[in-house]
Length: 310
Image (cartoon, rainbow, N blue to C red; front, top):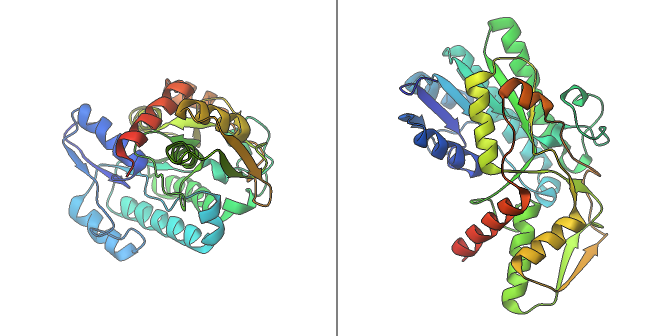
C-alpha cells in the first residue's frame, strides 16, 4: 500500500479497528480516516455515498459491526442482522461506485454451520445453518461474502473477505451485558476477588470449545491481506487451537489469582458445540500466522483491564 494513500477504517475507533489504526500509524501511513457514527451513519446508504464522494479512499478496511455475546444476540437478533447487513451493503456499494482500489472485509466465525467439521475450512461455510443464538449476525456477515464475490465478477471490484475467530486483548469490551466470553470472565473473576466472593456462576455446562486470536495478531492479518491478497476466496484468521469453556475459566481464574468455586448454570445456552478454524489458507495466501501465545495474550489483557477498570 502507498503510504500517501487515503485509508478508511470503518469501526476504526473500536476494538480491532483501534489496533489496526495503531499498526498503520507505526508503519507510516499518514492519511487514515476513522469516522464515528456521528460523522457518518454507515447504515444510511445516502450518507455513506456522500462520505465516500468526499474522501475518496484508496483502501477500505470494513470492520464496523454490531457485535456482542450470546445474551446480546438473543435479545436483539433483528438489530444484529439489520445493522450488519445495512452497513455492509452501503460500504461495498459506495466503494464500488467511487472506485476504491481495495476493500478488506471482516466476517465472523459465527457464519459457519453449527455442526461444521473441526477444524472449520472455508469450503464448509455453506454446508449448514449457523448456531441459532447468533445466526442472524453470522448470516448477515456471510451475505457480504456473496456480495463481494458478485461485485468482483460483475464490476471487477477487488473486495477480499477474512473470517476471524473470536478476538481478545487490550481495549476489549468488558460490559457484562454485551461482552464476549474472555472479557466477561476476566471481569467476573476480578470482581469476585476484589469483593472476597467465593463463587462465580457462568453460562452453560462448560463443554463447548472455542478458539481465540489475540487482537494485534488479527490486525497484522488484515494488513497482510491488504498487501498480499487479491483473491475471491474467503480466508480464515485464527490461532489454530481450541479450548473448552471449563478449561478457559480455570485458566483465567488462575491468572487473575482467584481460587473460588465456578458454578455452571445449564439453564443458559452453550452456543455452538465446537469452534476451531483451519488456518492453512492464511499461511499459504497471506504469509501470515498468529504469533502471540494464548497465556501471554491473556496476561496482557488482564493487566490492561486492571489498569483501566473503574
